[in-house]
Amino acid sequence: MAFKIFNTLTRKKEDFKPIKGKTVRMYTCGPTVYNFAHIGNLRTYMFEDLLRRYLDYKGFSVKQVMNLTDVDDKTIRDSQKEKIPLKNFTEKYIQAFYEDLAKLRIEKAEVYPKATEHIDEMVQIIKVLLDKGFAYKADDGSIYFSIKKFKDYGKLAHINTDDLKAGARVKHDEYEKDNLADFALWKNWSKDDGDVFWETELGKGRPGWHIECSAMSMKHLSNAFKKKTFDPDGFSTIDIHTGGVDNMFPHHEDEIAQSEAATGKDFVRYWMHSEHLIVGGKKMSKSLGNFYTLRDLIEKGHDPLAVRYVLLSIHYKQQLNFTFDSLNGAKKVIEKFHDVISKLGMADGEGIDFKAKIKKTRKMFEEALDDDLNISAALGAVFELVKEINTLLMENKISKANAKDIIAALENFDSIIGVMKRDENLDSGIEVLIKKRDEARVKKDWAMSDKIRDELKSKGIVLEDTPQGTIWKKT
Ligand code: AMP
Ligand code: ZN
Image (cartoon, rainbow, N blue to C red; front, top):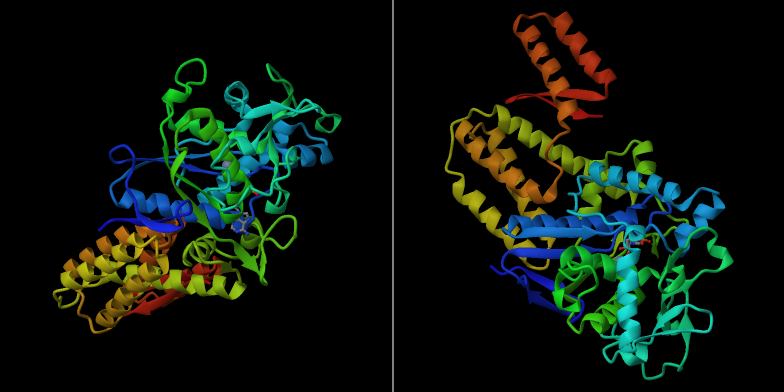
């Protein structure tokens, strides 16, 4: 079946088809590295993880580029506040970001380009925009994109530019639709920028935020910079560009304007935007101060995999209301997966024909994800299977061969869900102790068996003896 995705550009679900063969070139707007990512940001990266995992599952070869915004209004403001050079300031948060992604099992993008390492590419695009008459230098020495000159301006966010006041300009990176105006491509140095500037053909200054993503996506996903200078003919339309819904305007609208004006080609084929994570009815954001980082939650004793599950399990186009109840619920779901896999590993029952049931579940799972990544329905299909397996295990009907097939199917589903595999380091140590305890029990060495149980308990692990054997859980 075709994989359908909702394209923000057309506001329709469309069949997904890459521009060239089976390769998918995907650009995801990455973090602004001026603080730790909060779980709202991480929800967006989780949606992109789901997308990339499913494209992979469908047999596509994904090249994902996720940029790191390491120079913009906010990074400069906060590095100055802390009196730390911009590079050292952002590096700390870049490393923390990678750690968060690893803890959440978010698959790595192929490239993580930094804005500060692409200034030359940005300058080259801006020069083309000046030459073509889409950009102009204002009195303050900064360079702006003239949105009236680009006839398709507003096509992504569906805004009308008719009422635009001629000459209105906005220098800040972020602004509301009400402040629709010519936006800054290059910001002439001002004393507020301190030591953050580049001496370029455009003058002494720094780039605006939007041009950063145009330059990095073209550089890493097309041949626009294969020659020494910017080559619009080398650019080919990018397959997918993603971000949170707040990126749609002005960031993505401005990216389209500058990129299409510079190349004369469509910038992106499919635009995808995930909805926000909210708390108490409000968008989680740094400015509102209503946020949790992954570190906060781990410190409170939560398992990063439970966070993964919460962020993943609601359809990306629906707002996700974060609560601690949902986190506790996620922990139970993951335990259920771990329990059933442990029991299957020890199952040795009569055996039944289970292949058709697995096939049906796989079909439901894929149909759900083919429908614009309907993960809730896909999970529903897997839960139904797990429920049935548990009943059959209780009745001792699952044979070794059945178990092997079922485990393979669950592993296949987990290539998308990503929570079933246990932490291997932890796992192997515990397995050794459980084995020792089993041996002690066979020898009726109850003192040793109790000692091991207590030792595990002190490590936060409880044992449960089931008909299939001993399984364990974290308390
Ligand atoms: P930033 O670091 O502010 O540039 O944001 C990084 C990504 O997180 C962007 O794609 C934003 O759209 C996304 N984002 C910001 N806040 C939220 C939220 N509350 N829920 C979901 N995504 C968010
Ligand atoms: Zn971006």
